[in-house]
Length: 132
Image 1 (cartoon, rainbow, N blue to C red):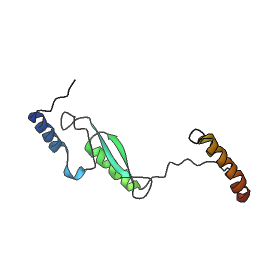
Image 2 (image 1 turned 135 degrees about the horizontal axis):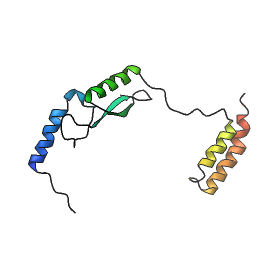
Image 3 (image 1 turned 90 degrees about the horizontal axis):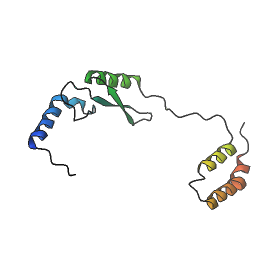
Image 4 (image 1 turned 45 degrees about the vertical axis):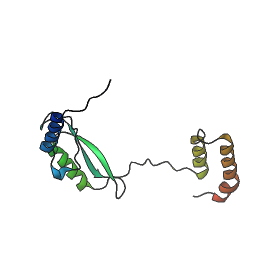
């Protein structure tokens, strides 16, 4: 089944809808173009500070454009959030290396895994010692 081209009237209707619902200052407040009118129930996406400097993350806000603007301002005022990196319990380098190699076992060939284990056992582990 082929999709047909939109009629010129439909294109003008979409343009008029976008012009009536979007403010030029809200270029980072995005919404679905298929909504039926100005007071539709579309969600808004806002750009807020990310976990790393110079990065942003996108959040979806359900509600009005006023609520989306308020959420954006509150996220900007709150500053950069803490990174959601899970803190691994204290473990030795040997335990980490073993866990890493088990996780990569499906990616590396058996020969590569054996070579890495041997090189680690002979060269890295004796020199790392214990860190107390």
